[in-house]
Length: 182
Image 1 (cartoon, rainbow, N blue to C red):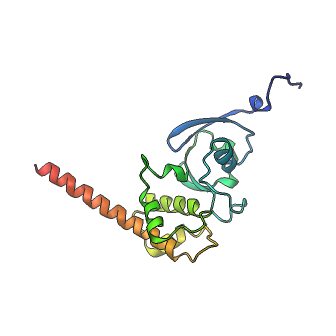
Image 2: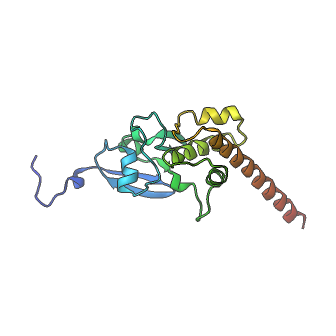
Image 3: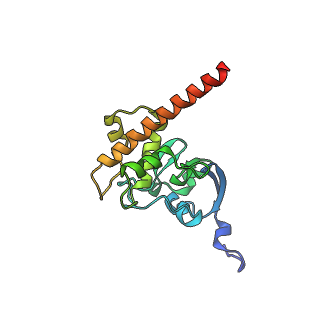
């Protein structure tokens, strides 16, 4: 099969459509290109980090269809039609997510390589287990490695975010009851 001179290789690649952080995206890239590379290079979402490139460290973790995945192991073709959330999608309207605030306040972030993956793993945990025990936090983050610190500040950050979420829920419930009482 010969190619016309003005035809770029990307025009021969399939259009792959998916949602990232609530926005519809379409890319024309080699279908076996890693999702990690598409996010960083093609969509310029550089929060997701590459640590090992082998699915062992969790630095590249993102949520895909409500499942935590190592984006370094996912060919972008598998993301066709998927709903993907990266660390950039945690903050809303410029306000940090409670997990991000807790990591800042409790020293859960060090060099920053593991932090996005830790945040995504913690977000996955809290989405399904809003009141995790210390054991559940450790188990949820077991696939994520940090080479800078002991994990205690990270675990404390996740626990604090869960507590902050509980306090926010209680405050919203109280305000709602007050509003209805009027």
